Length: 125
Image (cartoon, rainbow, N blue to C red; front, top):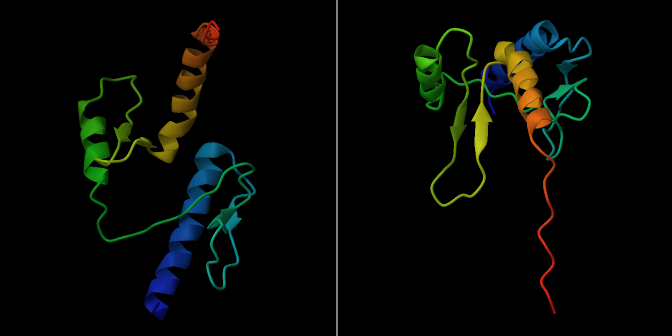
């Protein structure tokens, strides 16, 4: 990795930490001191129970989906994108850090309203 790429990565990590400090009250969020980027190391520290990878590129194609959700959402709605690659079974969600607190409040409200899950009945012998 070239010097310019490393500098850009460090700047992106510092910027991302500042965004999370602002929008998520993550006052301890900071760039990890990475020397080799070992597997399992998060790019940002100070986010208990969360693992954050920071990616900063000239263009990220998936952001077009989020921009569409933002354009199409009605006032008062929190835009997000659910996406999945063909052949994969896991979905991913993308949203703006500034929208995450409201997204979390609305998600928790929906979960709280859901009746408890009933266990599948055991098969009869």
